[in-house]
Length: 319
Image (cartoon, rainbow, N blue to C red; front, side):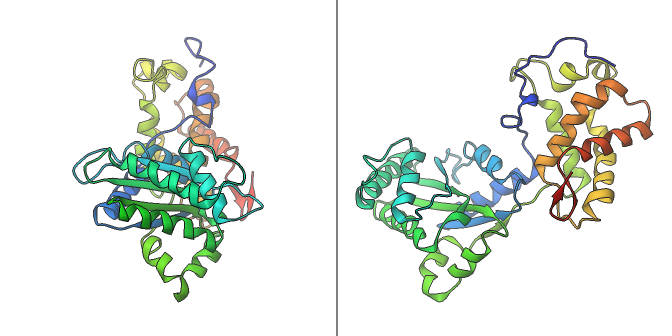
């Protein structure tokens, strides 16, 4: 089985850094963050395994969070770097770069940087009548506890200006444990109370139903966006003409993953990175060549696609 026409070489399916689909987990995370905000929380933290899709989810949600009255929420995202110098000043520099401003010099003081950051946040909060704004801090496990003082200062300064800031920290589960243990000490109660009372555990796919929803989102992808052909029209035109649906793979995909990877390796969920890699391999390499007439062949194609997706074959090791 071959493609009926050439596919553009810049199709997003070929580029893992730009290909993205919404998921049920993102819907759940959006509801949780909005609940924090609407109920007056000043912060929370999100943890999950590495390569499970946390950063991409927050990147997407940065354009879709709303106030209780339905106004768009301005969101600032910073990705903390693993610098040698872990200072409060380095946090302010990170925030300046995140808002599109450069430090005046390598020696610019925290005081002046904090004034510039606070002014920016206050101005952005005017985009909604409730003066609410979200700061997402990615890779927060890279922080030292003293660096959290910058976020507490920003929050306090904005309160004085009538701005409701919520800080959402995002990090890898195992790597963030030491910092979280420190924050739980009574001497850091001012940090714990502001930012770490609310917790959300990010996970991958946990059910056949969730796999089916994601496959449906795969099938909706068009390139060019909105006007171009769907994935099936581009890559599997003959199956599309036969009215075959990608969602028909949900049951064998989930069953084979669970029986051959999930249960034996005691994986709590199927990370999106590996799920997307599996489905992309099926669409690009196997389904165009072998079709869907044989259930046994479909299962073999799924096994081969899972094997090359990068999923671990044993604890700590990938294929």
